[in-house]
Amino acid sequence: MNYMNNYEKLNEYLSEIAETGYIIDVLKWEMDTTAPKKSLDFLIKVKTKMEMKNFNLATSSKYLKLLNNLINSQEFAKLSQEEQIIIKDMKEDYEASKRIPTIFYEEYCTLLSNSEKAWVEAKEQNDYNIFKPYLKDVIDSTKKFYTYMYPDKDLYNAMLDTYEHNLDKNKIDKLFSDLKAEIIPLVKNLKPAKIIPETKKYSNQELIDVAKYLLDYIGFDNSRGTLGIFAHGYTCKFNNDDVRITFSNNKTIFDHVCTVIHEGGHGIFEQNIGPNLHKLSISEINKYALHESQSRFFENILGRNYNFWTPIYKDIKDMLNLSLTQEEFVSYLNNAHPSLIRTGADELTYCLHIIMRYEIERDLFDNKITVDDLPRIWNEKTKEYLGLEITNDRDGILQDVHWSDGSFGYFPSYLIGSIFDGMLINSVEKELGNIDTLLSTGRIKEITKYLNNNIHKYGGAYQIEEVAKRVCNSELDIKPLVNYFKDKYGK
Image 1 (cartoon, rainbow, N blue to C red):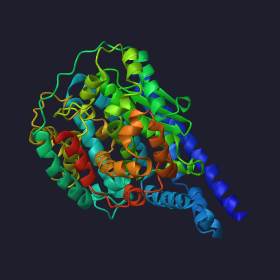
Image 2: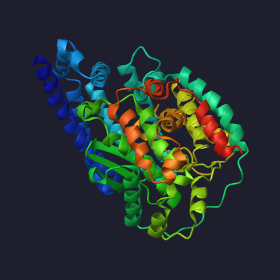
Image 3: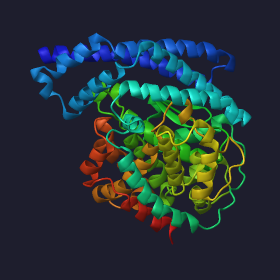
Image 4: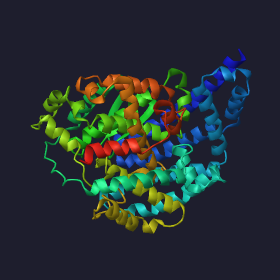
């Protein structure tokens, strides 16, 4: 009975934290999608107040007592392994967050909201100088933020650890260096890019209708999700029955379907976390590479596969009033060539986009470069890795939202996820059979169910290195991904 009391009391408190987080997420969603521009300053104030309430709940002595009571009880061992891991992670998160001064945290939250607002304006105006002073403040404050939380850690390693536990600069340097050596020759030997055909300008409703169709097809439950329009695509889980997806309405239809399938992968993960972990899932930090692996597996391994479209292309063609054959449509989805914009990049050159961002962040927080150097360094690496010249800020230093909201250390998660995806192909086929056959016969939900049962239901309990060992029986290894790229782009 003591176990139930301890567990129920913790869950009751976590519900209070989750409810506050829900309000924060709703405010963020409104700010991004439907709120009038002139309301943003007011909404930022409200959002900051709610963030402070959430912070106070997550750093209270009551919360620590509830965690300790459960962890130190004899019944803690009766919890599932995943519950035990997440609850211990919660205590570690508490101890780190408790070191942050309350006044500083409030100032930091306000800064990040204003910074993202400035980034949107700078991108619209194509002027880095609008964003630059905010970025400088965000960098300086983010250094303080992580120094407070992890005073004994290397600064950038602490940031990396926030998004994927135990992956530090040494591990990532080795993985990315080896991968870069394999990919650059493939990129240099790519055939000239195909000219993307003009398609009609689709209304927001037409884009939403296609998105809902694709999401339903891959296994996302539209009755527990909704869609919105924003400058870039992202997925936000308010709770397991309210998962929201945004996408841009100014991309090509080829970019649109890839974004939808990508974000659908995130959403499917969130909707299929085991019921015993629902409340505990508010602590799913340090596992972002695993999340990105799922979105990129759906987008690239499945969604860019010709066979994915075989059962549904007639419907898609009719919905979009396309004159393209399936062969032509899929060829544009796999139009591999160097490009300036990360989010519109093909799966091969995308790797180099992530590597250059990682290298810039690493050097920035190792104090080798400053905010004044960023546009120049960005342009130099774009030229070195992709052979392209940056001609404006919007297509260069301003293209990503991540730095505006302090998400330094997140970018490597995308590529670590893709490395895992190369390994995951073999595991899926060993269990279910040939992926091409599954897709061509409309059995994609068998793949989705496999991912639900082997990855999604465990939520954020396991880091990607552990999942690689458990699901793929291997350490993280670039070879399967390299072989996938060579088979597809090296011929």
